[in-house]
Image 1 (cartoon, rainbow, N blue to C red):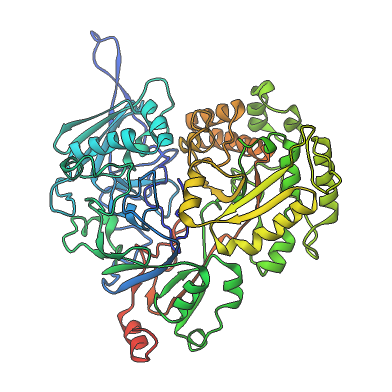
Image 2 (spheres, rainbow, N blue to C red; image 1 turned 180 degrees about the vertical axis):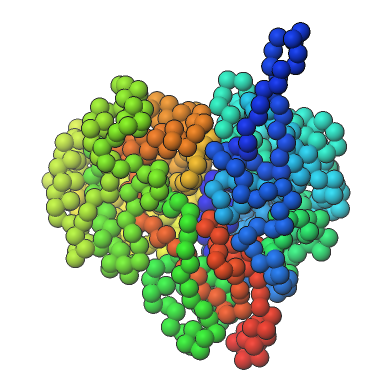
Length: 633
């Protein structure tokens, strides 16, 4: 659920949660002498809740791929920062990009239907209507990259080592819901689900678990722990394996020539490059200059200034570099400046609201971001899950049932939205006056030295922590506005390793971050906003939680139809926005990409993935023409 920081490209294959049920089972009467009904077992090639799968059993390929896509060439892109491990599950250090992509799972997502998955390592799954358990039937031909077969024992081992050595927030959530996994045979594995919890997303939870080689881990258990950094990548079963690397400079993955799954229908038209190269840079300026020199050839832009001003170099003018804006059908992630709710200065909601008012989106967007972005208000922006207007209907009933767990004003008010600001100046005077009044009311008056202190003489101090130079020009004016209100605010950019450690330990006041959103949210909400995980979850940087939030998450996970899910998510959106733990910033709603014109992509692209790493391909003739012109090496 945590987005890969500093990634130019970040496809999330296995972190989505599958949300749909295939078909309805019928109860069969076993006879007059047996006074009970037994559930039929459903067997399927995939799984989808709230509806049917788009693709039938035995389908040839996904509609959004090019089944004739040629194989060959290299994808190269940039990353910013450092790496000191190829273990993506370590609790220490930073893993190299794509290090988690070496592991496959039982199911793989479809990119053109929400939360629907199909068999990858598993050729089929079986489950009763109650979904009290699920059995996966593994493909006998599935192999790890060392040629050894993937067995049910490997699947059980992978599940258990994630509980024993994985992230605490993941382990605590999963252990309560999935008490047992067992191998029923070499290629048949069963997961049991706890009896007192909702069933939604449990099958997809285990279906998306990465599969490790049990033999590889057990050959050296002390040095191959899942929670420790290591440069050994481990043994996976995915199409690409680690080729070479130069620490903090370069990683190259190559196609496994013996990859077992080349001919599977879910893989047709995918994984088209011979190699994937990632070049690391210390800052965005160096990365941009390297792209101009064709040191790498694909760039997903995340800097509005660069997009507006940096693509006027000769290769663009000559047509050697293509620059495109491509549609993004995903829910925009809830991005913003996140306040640490454990900090004493943020305990008062009036202080949090005042901090929000110090940010001027309109000026930032027009003056610093070339008007490219839109203001974000909701955690499910622009979707049917977004709370709008005064609550009514089923959403109102749900909120009323929360009783004194919520502020009664929520029942008769529109949801909290990002404030409007004047675009012609950095600090909107009207909002600043309102913010300062809130701080006065919260017990933080301005002293003779211009700083705000409480009745204990403590200064209202806020540190904005960052490791991203691109953020400097956005965050510094925001911090300046905080200082103009009498807050002892400062912007502190530190190195990648320090930032990673302090973020994990929640040792910060404010950071820039995101909460990932989904069209069909489920159990992942416990790690993002749940009470039990709030103290340690890396997926909840603010630490926000509460009885009302917990109750709504329970409702969402228990929802058995789309209408009930929608009403409860809208109620949760309304309450999260009311807590004001984040300064909402912006969203784009499209991908900004530039590349040396040798790449081709499916047309149209699927709505829920850009697919550069696994759907695009190299046009050999275009690549040769660029080399002949001396544009690329």
